[in-house]
Length: 262
Image 1 (cartoon, rainbow, N blue to C red):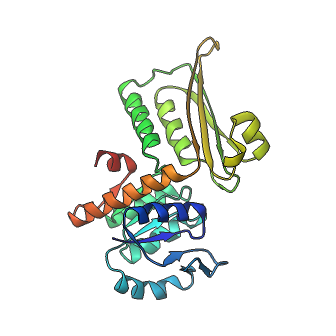
Image 2 (image 1 turned 120 degrees about the vertical axis):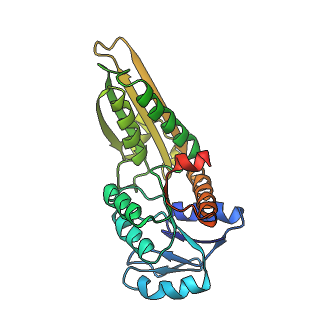
Image 3 (image 1 turned 90 degrees about the vertical axis):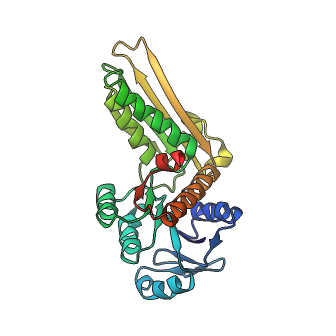
């Protein structure tokens, strides 16, 4: 299986490449990148102005290519347009961008891809449970106030897509509020969220608090992740899942819940 991991030399891209290599996927020596970097660790980094010209030769050399995208929120929609234009199936791990436009693009093209705000299987399972609860018991948290705090490494530019998804589920259960507090200051990450100092450069700590109107009842949900390996393994699962769907002529747009079920 030929895989192009885009976003080099980003840490998440490197972790995904390592996870895919463990499964004997062939990581090709090319990666989409921004304007500033030309090469990294044997990878030729394709800049926006040259990638359309070079991709045809790459696809001839590496047929049946699947792209994995861990780039920057500002690149999400442009990269997706590139994948669709050149008929490259992809796994979108990058958060942010115009998600409505992204989904409209791939659905209109019936383009084979996996798109999810979080690639960690266990967190996705939690998300699925909360979605099920919202559908089964709408209004169960009526009159409760929701407060959300999420902490990620200071280089993460956007609000957590997972936090947004879980907020929607709690709101569908009737909770009021749901504004997401982003913490990107390392002192606060350690003092308020108890992030270990060694993991300040790569973590995802989320707390969802629900309080009754008179504050006599408090519910709290947390998922705290140190490091990024959990996302790398989930992304490799998504690549394997997508390849099987393509081989079975069952292409389309999938999320990580479909990957779990598959």
